[in-house]
Length: 334
Image (tube, rainbow, N blue to C red; front, side):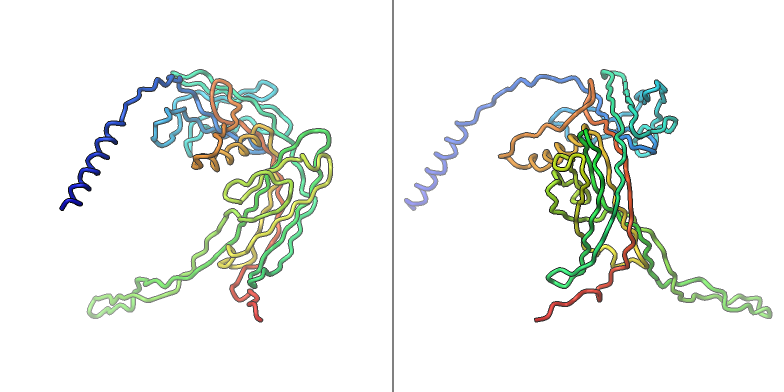
């Protein structure tokens, strides 16, 4: 009994100590005027699409939504201007101005209650893929794996920035048995129709277009993005030279392909602002849940606003691969 009383006294003392240490502290946080957030990447030979939202308070957990009712324009270097229209996918869209390599474009966005946001970018010239080679091998567990290599000439005398991504496009089919309403026969004497159902296999066809997850050990790669479906790098190690980049991927995603599948390899020449944005954004994703990490400021090139206006040109090559079957594996044997 004495032990229980002592325990209760200790718990009571600890509780009083804990409550006595509580103190409410009021912190004055400067109120920052809301700003327009502009996110857009202008791609050569593509239409214009701009996503607008607004900044929020740090404690605001509401979902990000598009800023409607804004005036958004794009102006090219010949001072031709197109007013974008709010449309599908919560984007401001326009197709009156064609995006061309090597040319400069300015996006302006204005909305009631916000300062007018503005940004300018120059579309870099595309860099052709000189060669694309693939080789199928097997890993130590007998699984088929594809090695690929692309080669390109880096333009000399200027800093160049790149992304590389892989996608696949293939057709797959499957059959399902369905019960189909059917007329068996007509009895004219009794004026009746005998009906029933018949079971029949119906074939369905669909088309898949999805990223290909790959890895690479090239020294030039500076950042992975999009869950390893693309890599980010610059010409810092090979300025003005021919360069080859290698990688490898497993063809597991082709197990249900009906026939050969196309693998599209895209080499994207991007401007410096977009490069810095992706690089800093990925660092931010890695650091935001680490209490010991140094905070990362994501690159921004929007004047009187926040966000990114990037420029990009894409060169794509492709190769066909056979469908992947489980029996294609080489089972390891001692």
